[in-house]
Image 1 (cartoon, protein in one colour):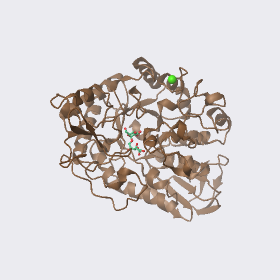
Image 2 (image 1 turned 60 degrees about the vertical axis):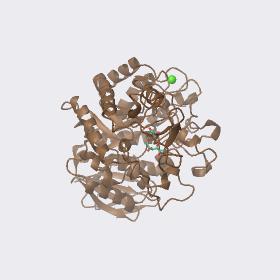
Image 3 (image 1 turned 90 degrees about the vertical axis):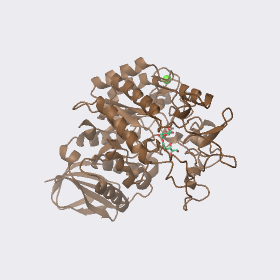
Image 4 (image 1 turned 135 degrees about the vertical axis):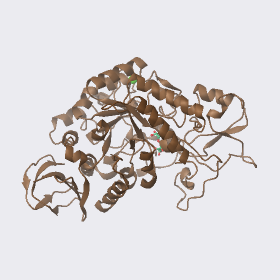
Length: 528
Ligand code: TEU
Ligand code: CA
């Protein structure tokens, strides 16, 4: 099945390539860069939202699910992009945002117009608490209560994110049918599947019960962390809704042309893997991001991999991620040398990898001063300091793609919506293509190597996870050895072998019973 062998590449359309010179990336820009993506060797693209939107959350607030925002182009531009991608053998996944709409979506405008409007029940409305105030203690992801009072009708509406992103009421079968129609619209156009936004948040507790307090919460942590999330997240009904969405995908699936569901799900493993049974092909496994990169040691990474592997049935296909448009860049978290080691890890573990645009250049977080901050999540925390005293939020990982050393890094001819990272003259596609040892060439080599069937499907087995070295076997024929330290390390091998690839891209020799790893070196060995 194609999605098991694929490498998925995430594009944040605002930041990839601007074609019409307004400083914002667009669909035509992506189309022009398809040859680059083909050359990189990835198999599928996931495009973050490009739908009509007031852009309060940069497209994750959708005002029309079946049209393209003029900032990004037209539906015709999308058709051309899709057609050309398919011609090159690239699949295209689009972002489906079913949990909430924009407050400017016609459905919400109707819903809020009166209590007896037929669409009233399409969103989650509730009376004020008996003594006044919000119906319960639920907090939004972006800070503050998850409820906003609507003067006109005297009730509160639920929003897990911004007040401008009201939650749809998934218990209402009309809502589910409407989203299914949206899916069919894009499937008929030919998309290969969806990355479904906030899949684990579709349903909330019917009784709207208060969340219990979180004993680990400390002042300074985010508002939503004040409570546990047993009533707002991962409800049993959600699994049924996922199943229904899967049926819609299956209406359009054929052998070799399965339409797939990638689900955005931030949950512990035991809860995460239940989404396989619900029919989600690839419930995103973010554990390398939120448990791995914060404690980058062989013991910890091996524990994550083993725990996940042990919970999967033979029907569940794993997947791994190191970055996305909501998370700080991997190279900024563990350092550039270790980001290369992490790339070897991602492409040689069992499972489908998803790669975030620019990470193949080793792109680092942009430093965005307060005057230039765009992310609504950050703006709501104005004055607060994030890491290194810089503003918090998600802009740092959304800076423009660095194509070449020309002004604005070849991203645009106008000033981009977020500043280009100042390191672009020395870190860009054009330069790294010329440099045989660049991160870009490492990623290309890894993607090519990963086509090997045994590396794709061979069982995972830990070989060593201590003393700064993490090594594992894939099938019988492959051994991956990663040095997490800045010192030399030696590793005993089960058999002789040959270096197929080193992060340093400078050796391909035979090795005997012992492998010497240089500082920050990762090696993929073909065993005899
Ligand atoms: O993200 C959902 C999510 O829970 C987090 O990634 C969240 O955005 C972050 O922790 C807050 O700082 C998805 C999208 O990926 C994100 O871009 C959207 O803002 C969000 O849903 C709402 O649609
Ligand atoms: Ca543009």
